[in-house]
Length: 85
Image 1 (cartoon, rainbow, N blue to C red):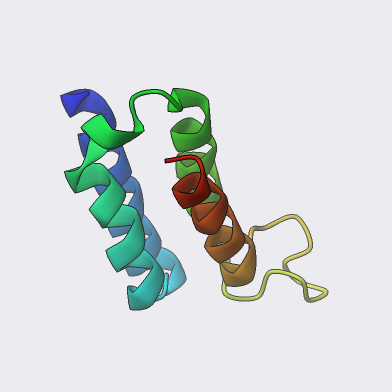
Image 2 (image 1 turned 180 degrees about the horizontal axis):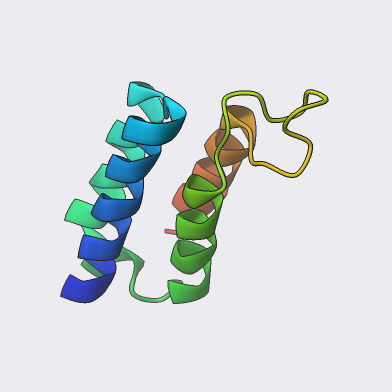
């Protein structure tokens, strides 16, 4: 689990530095990393969240970022994760 925690934290850090990942989302994703044991029954969802954060682009949904993940998509996915607890 420690490896997964570090992977989440590193992914968020990179997204914040390179893609202007919103602080409000970073806090929520890092909360999952800090409490990873609570999410041990849904490792696939956590892996998907990591992929979504790494694919985040501030311009997702526009002509330039059609293949990227938008902030609202990550927010919806976080809600889905929380609903499984």
